[in-house]
Length: 445
Image (cartoon, rainbow, N blue to C red; front, side, top):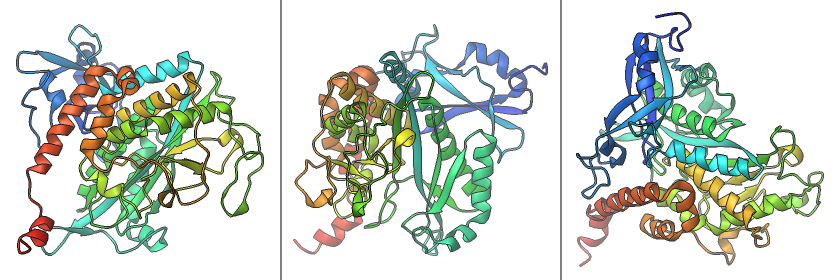
């Protein structure tokens, strides 16, 4: 293999693509053949794209055994290193048909399409992610318990996880992801990683990489890292907050920024300028208008709705406000060039490509149709009269099924398959009797 090969510094390369559930899938190939194989792509049965979490195939899937192959086509960019696996690189892939036409169920392609639509409208999107997750260890009863017993920002929690944090940050830095912060979140064993704003595809790739990395590194340390939204009853759960801004082609002017001096922030604070542009307000209106449908994509599991409950710090009300964490959409107090919107609905179990595609599509709809948002709130939105988000996955899927904007932007076949997979998941949940039900009802009737 020549030294100019994209994979020349590795022994093996993992080819990664993400299914509709957000599960990283792929294969590993010798680096010596990666460049040659990349030209043809890496084929597999199309039905794999519709795997459920069980895992299994849908009873009436779109792609059955007669459907032939789909091909994972890696990016032209060189593979990135897996710091925890010496000699192994990783390449992100899009899914196509054998003739290289786009495959309808490729979530990465859907995000690329929505990003292109925003750019055609004159806006270059930039996104940032706050990723929360739980670190667990084996318990004496055979189950799991939190890695530590600390809570928000406890410095001792950083000491207890020093080796883990070093490996997390080393792996992200080696992969080209800029880590801006790691801290202990509100619940025992819960951590958060944030990384710098960037191009939507690159950030979604980063989330897919980090999720893969967290589970692998945790296993090496004898613990478990889980992106399950709510691993414990009654506790705050794992969110994946999305920070969004729109820019000009030169990335010099933030289209959300404005010195309108028209926003009141908590505790009487008012950052200089304290305002957002009409474009930002239209985007807010689009996100609020489509929040019910976005819930299905952003909270895609039955367990997700253990997080979206009144009394928690997760959103339940379709409202927005300046520096207000009781709403589904928050305007952080960093204005001017740093002006952005924080969409607080997604959780860490969601497919990052689908989440960003749906969020950008909703914002674009608001801008194109010049939607106007309701007045912002500075109060606790959970105690005010606002429309509530869906309380179950099934209800959220009903909203998604009825939403023409999201279906058009993400692609109707993709949305239809996503809904089918998630309705199947909900049906299997409905067929399983829980311990809570036995404890509550067995002796009561």
